[in-house]
Length: 436
Image 1 (tube, rainbow, N blue to C red):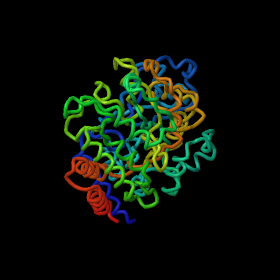
Image 2: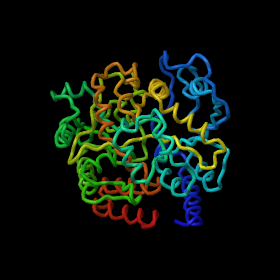
Image 3: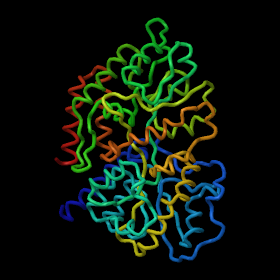
Image 4: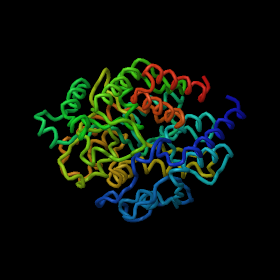
């Protein structure tokens, strides 16, 4: 693609992101994985004294640094590498648009970008970030230890342009007390989609014609795509950058519309109240980052499981990627920073601080991400199980495309259009917006 066209694409993204202020990581919504929330001591993960190094490197993120020095991975990076690391925090609502502007203008003030999935393909194609394969060849980072989704994304981009700073997923949250009252077995990590549908109906509580407790909360921005992927659609093609939905989306949207009509799920509305947390929904498909939010505050017994398996086991990964600005004046020290943050020490600190897993399987399996306050959880294996089924899916698409699709799905759930019409309208909008 020619430089002028790429610059135009990037500036278009700047304008689009500006109109989407309030969206969260991956250009979606603000409930994405929160990085570096205070947690227990990282122990031996912190270094005692700075290593020999030198140089000054800037890194940008949307999260403030952790106030606990032992859990501040940037401070520990300085100590371990000897590189003077300056952290620039850009508000989440402006994050993607600011980075797009930097890449479009060739800004060299930031050495290491932590970028969202929706930006990595454009930044790579524009030559705004460096391929990391040569660095990885001489590194201790075991690329064979990454979850499969990392290699698939790199294959689609033609090179490794970014390394995932963490990996959050979507999981099933369920109210154990309600399952007990209904005499139902708890969900397992191999729960079938048909079992989920049947349980949702049985768990629904009615007060006359009105629903007092829903069997399951309505899909949110993230989990519409988990259901569609589970129904068999690819959703995102990394080789072409296209939205790929069809029969799977029609099926899942149709199922949701049926549940809404029966009062098993709530109608779509502007009310963003968490029905599961308030005890008004027996189940919810939601991001794993809610575990840290819930902790021991819900007032009822709850646990987690992998999302139910429909035609395939599917889970969207949510993260950001460490990348090196192609205009960095010191890419070698920038790599030292990235390499430390991807090391066992750096990833363990991140997991302890944020409650997010590492995309490196052996580190994720050690469980540093387990939130201690979530005392009712017994099925922690749901996290690593969901990670194994993880795919960089809808989050790699422009936020405007996925947001438009969710609006269409919600309309179909309300009976204002058919699932087929919603899927076609979403596909047509994506083709026009992305340009294919």
